[in-house]
Figure 1 (tube, rainbow, N blue to C red):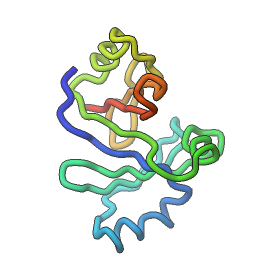
Figure 2: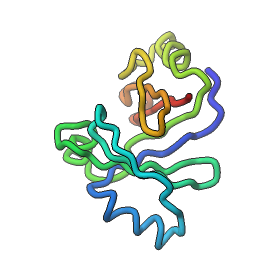
Figure 3: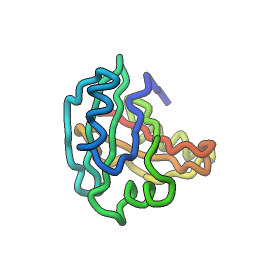
Length: 133
């Protein structure tokens, strides 16, 4: 598994529109993209901090994963994503080491990246994502 850096930190929010001003006006970051990922039932907004992105996640469906997360836990950090050159190889390696996978194979995510998630019960409670081109 070749992890190069933290690609992004995903933060679940009730409203991207209401959340962007904090990141822009208080932290001085600039939102450079807002995108809807329909098959994941989510709207995203991105900010750069050095080499790492902050990804805000707003549910477009209360029954989607972010909607359920916010209902159960409230707003806050949802996941950490690690950049890798081969998402499927990283998933296979984690699986071979006994980590339960949410995704057996990569799928398309925001910004056109391939993504795959590991189950938080096997990652010390942190929802972990691999992502890459």
